[in-house]
Image 1 (cartoon, one colour):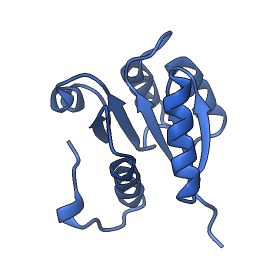
Image 2: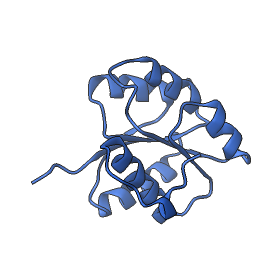
Image 3: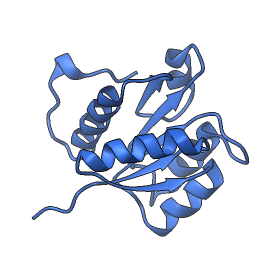
Image 4: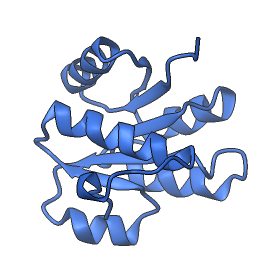
Length: 136
């Protein structure tokens, strides 16, 4: 039996983090949580997840700064990062930061699961249906 993928949820809002984790757990993912970018970088270096769902606007270290730090480290550079952001222009964000995909807040939880599945498949070299692709 293949172990369920581990998703690190990086979100400073407790209610949003809990909602995401509960939904992902119900969809057969294991989850862990970091409350900010600095904690996320430390956690990923200790135990790399299969994918990271990261808010961009956080205290101590933003999601963009954390993503940049993770991409610079050969041990963590290939972990897919799906960002969530309340910033209006997610296309510009996706072009400026080392992210695999950006979903605007508020987002649909089913869209988040779709983005996770799509990016996990890409990370494992599996084909993705072009009609489902929403990469930046």
